[in-house]
Length: 283
Image (tube, rainbow, N blue to C red; front, top):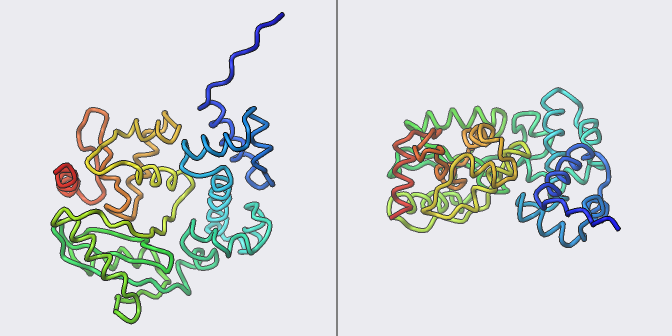
């Protein structure tokens, strides 16, 4: 009587599921069908997939679709055609809560933020000039720079056709409070504010940024550990690129990622700021 074969390692099953979703993102995939492919129960697959990737299989599929949608919009496709070719199947699937993946409606994204109003506020912080900007869904931009004018130029480059408004009490009362809370964290060691974030990026980038949100204050990981943490151990360079593309300083804590030898590595806003952030968190 033949011996039963050894079960596939859990990570192999999850990687296979992710690859299958990537290859069939435009199709209707049920949790039961995905679970049967890797010989797991639907509830178990849901649990272990979310533990590994930070999102459910359904959210992962939507992220793949959204990445394709963004590429089609940037490539000049008409909005309706891009939505259906990306596999969403209906306009409401994109114009509902799924828009949070790119932070604005598809038409506004293609048009560089046209029709969107983005509020911003700046402060001189312990680490230099800082500008924070938010859509109605959450913080979409936190940057350090030389001064407010330089930072505003960077914000305009991100949202070239959006209406940018300086935060005022009657327009966005929360934004000034958010900047004040972040400044208190930088200067006085107050808790890092837990703010709503409007993450905009590819499925891979968002996966990296979400994993970074799970790294505890005072801890640091290597680029290799970060790649392994998202179950892509050979993607250390890609995760480093995702860290460099992060537009939300401190709140998405890419400063907690070091080189494998323990050296600081790079940081979009300068190594002195990275060193200061790590030192403050360790205190």
